[in-house]
Image 1 (cartoon, one colour):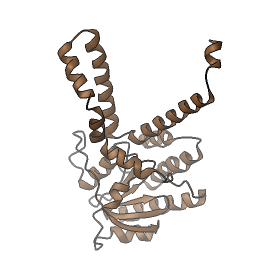
Image 2: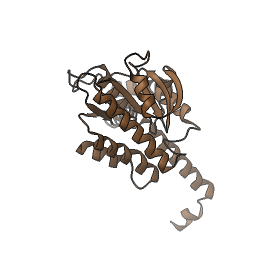
Image 3: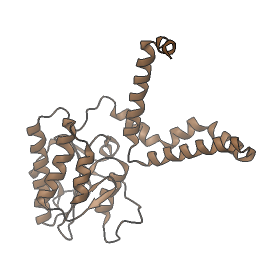
Image 4: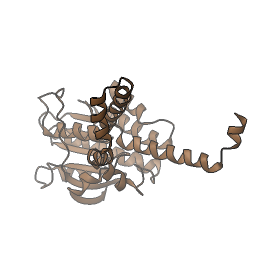
Length: 268
């Protein structure tokens, strides 16, 4: 054992750490996306390959081995959105990384105040806040704004007379990066049929990414929040503020993760 330890070079340790970091970042990128389910499926195929060899199931083994020979191409096809997102993320900073606590809280407060004002006026709205997973793909098909987050800006964008009021607003840090963005619609069978396109789009983006979507219903004036593929409805101003504060300010400090915000979200 001692001889084995002596043979370990510092380059070996660095290599292990580097590979671990890369794998960790890849897992963060695909976490909560369909790619994670695909990765589980590939794991099942790997286990099936082992058992087909062990049990001498030659036909099954031939089929699986034929698939593995094309696995590189299959991975590129299956994970194409995630690969594009990962490349787009390179060099980008995380949410609120360069902001002070005061700026964070001010931006979040503007979002909360805007959501409440929109709800009181029964103006439909969909506000998406980017977290670790980049929303660049959705921003590119919207109308670029790059404006500071403010209640007045959000109200003006979602006003019924605005040409981009039907789309979603995407917020990154303390900036509204785009408006009029089109989001994926969830196809989940467990989603209530009473929910409209705006709510389904909010759930859809929360399923595809780790973003937080705030939805204001124009029919009822209620505020909902979609996160991790789940929807919490009829939030009041205090609950919405608490959830957003826990998710973003605490996550940056490193004392907690988004799990704390998710826990509070589920309680609400």
